[in-house]
Image (tube, rainbow, N blue to C red):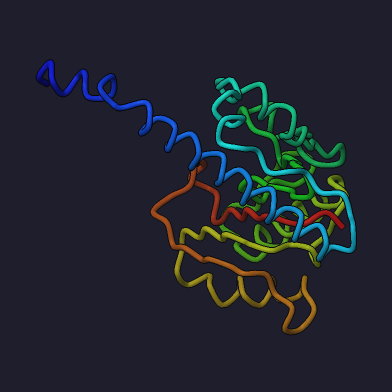
Length: 202
């Protein structure tokens, strides 16, 4: 950049600088006029005045972490007492509550004693649905408030049985959004499925 370009701002005449200042003041007056019009339309309710350009420039920038922590919902980790404590084997929470949502981890077919019906899809599917029902109850909600479900199957031939058992946990026509995937394998070779979901608090 040339010296002439660098000094261009310094060579502006006082008239140019006054004109720019006047344009800024005019814009601020227009913003205030719009605010007053809006206030009148709201029946005189108090609303916050828009900040001027100069005021916005004066707000110090922060890293954002502190501000986000003021509005971020507290997380609550759900560990139902009447189910097999999966967290004792892997670093996982069966579910996490955040605000008005409950996120349920992928749930396998362990019963309360940690046993798995090896090779029996219908038994595993039923146990998975019962496990999720217990997790949802512990979180303060139920199947009727589930919004989204992901089903992972290791065998394509189990889709029909999965749909039949799955449908029994919902009212007719009031099913969550769902994705069903056939996967190569799951963490335990004896798992025939896992299901995860997201629910609203009841």
